[in-house]
Amino acid sequence: MRRAHPRERDPVTGPGHYLAAERMLSSARSPQGRGEEEMATLAAAQIHATLALAAATAMNDSSGGMGAYDYDAWREIVSVHSPRPVTP
Image (cartoon, rainbow, N blue to C red; front, top):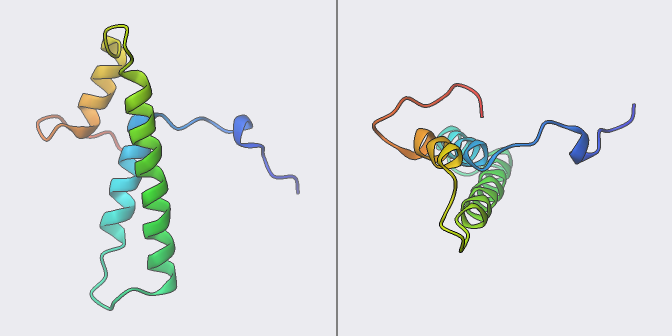
């Protein structure tokens, strides 16, 4: 079976990467210590967090910042005062 090229899949947005990292970090907290699976989850969370940071930085350009739609999407994810969506 052929693997889908990354560009053939649905892209993950910056806020989606942030939410994925947050979920992975919360699922990796184990009182039993750090096994291989948990370390892999933490590594994947770091990748998502880095991609979220890159997206936020790129969106906040020198031409006046990010647009209202993108700002609202980020605010929805990172705000403690608004509900978070179920899927990234």
